[in-house]
Length: 160
View 1 (cartoon, rainbow, N blue to C red):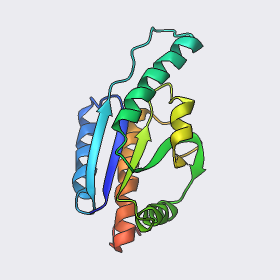
View 2: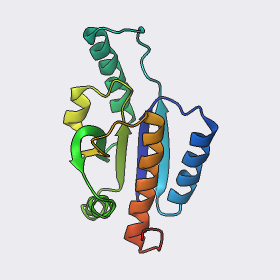
View 3: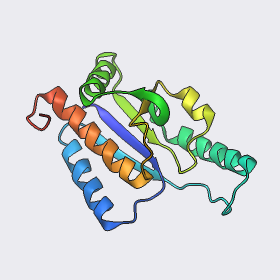
View 4: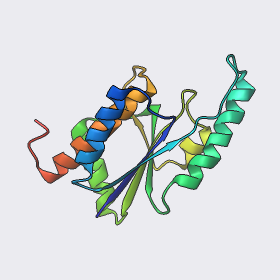
């Protein structure tokens, strides 16, 4: 069975986000082996300097690199990534499966983004929108789109 890992920097706290995330994780498990990894964001001062932000992102990068499943196709969610429709995302994941990869890993960075080294390591850079979303909402949106992509591939009626 294909495996999908979602690495998310930071923890969900609000009940409604936790409930939505749990629902999509449950739905995804019907199509793939799904794993969510919540990694801690590096604590920064209230008004961090660019150097402090960069140092924090580098510390996060090391943790992220240690958690990407070996051999997984790696996709980062970043504003400069490519915009895809739900159907195109489903097709992209389908291509990954056909390429012989047995797993995919998606990353939602911290509130300051992610180290350029992490973006360079990515097999694909995906943008959800030119708009800015709270990271907690973005996680729910990614989970829903992963579920939608899997349901499109399976030919279910979820995607209309």
